[in-house]
Length: 344
Image (cartoon, rainbow, N blue to C red; front, top):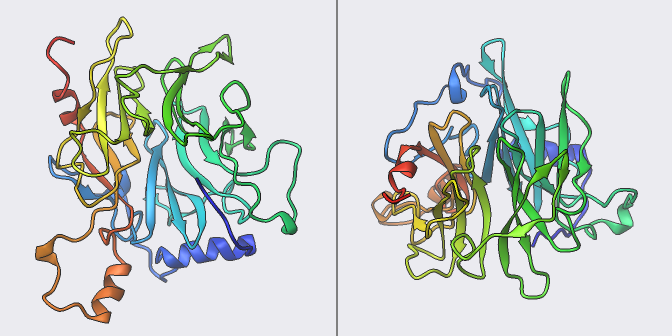
């Protein structure tokens, strides 16, 4: 669950995040081309956009518009959580900044997801329910997690609104992901057991239907969450804890779906993605299907650590990704389809 404990003005929160990201430097690099001009990865996972997106802070949750010209990601720091944005404008990527709809210190925003047609922007927020406005005395009280959405407008995105029932309930709902047909996949947490499971809801005549909890192939333990569904609904990548074939506490698994809506058994994405010492809980495949982005909290390997730890080393480590806090990694996504069982 997400908890809050103190109040700071919204402008200060934005400045704090940008300063901590190292984004207030006088010279921001000229970034052109796809994916912020980063060298594409191969079959080895690489930190994505070090010093720009992955900065040493807790960074996760990539989402892109279908044309690849807008990139959003989540940053959590100092108990605050915001959605960041960078855009390709006039041939150059803009300096990442807190998105206009995010940054209010009274609630947390995270887990952006954009529909495959680019017309809707979903995200998790703890902002107050519709029709209620907390004042400073209530700061930190609004911790209920709901899925919110914005519609595409002529100049960006419209005002956020609560997705409402039957998707949102009194239970926590989070990490939306949407297919081309409009079906939404999301996590719902049981308030009593704290178990979390993947649900989906079909969109019929513009209305979401009663969500269904997916079967034991997808929900194989009492703890699975943060699922990315392929736009064609052919596979789902999710984070699962408590399985015997894990590389660590929580790993990424893929479950393949057949045309008859049956699912394969979960398949671990392997040691290149999952690590014994890191946490993994935010998967995403780029709109072109070329790259798999994922959050990992992997720490430096033993051969990267000096024989004697100094304070300067710790300060430098704190300011760079791969320091044991969450960072965004990416890898060629073709390995996912190679895991599909031959009979499916």
